[in-house]
Amino acid sequence: MKKTLIKNVSGIAAILFLAFTRLLPHPPNVSPIAAIALFSGSFIGGFSAFGIPLLIMFISDLFLGLHATIPFVYASFVIITLFGFFLKKRDKFRYYIIASLSSSLLFFLITNFGVWLMYSMYPKNMNGLLLCYTMGIPFFRNAILGDLCYIIGTFYGIKLIAIISKRFHSKMFLK
Image (tube, rainbow, N blue to C red):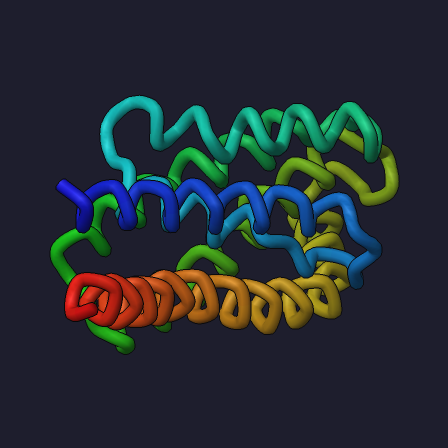
């Protein structure tokens, strides 16, 4: 019971901390939401796993600004949450790396398609779409680095919290 409580409190604390960092100044596309989506899918599971990253996005978008590509951004995080379900039984570093890189790529492909489709910055033909993806490469680099840091930090941060709390509780009961 105590182990489950510690795990749940640690998970909720991690999600709240990550959600708060979305409102802090950060480079473009360096955001904790992919980590929250993966973690929600892996840690929470069920239907509520999808609601957590979407709710955090919606609340933070109210502060940061709403835009025409929201459906594409939110759809990408729904799919990234599904990736988290895949991680539930695959607790290895390489799977975190694969999920992180896959999340970054998926977000890049879906959201840049949304930019091309919803805005008039690029011609509505194959050359315009390729130009849109080309112009998004600097943001893609940021997303890869940000996602790797947030995702690895989140999953291994929770493991570290579990180890520390286990040692703390074992010392408390030995006295």
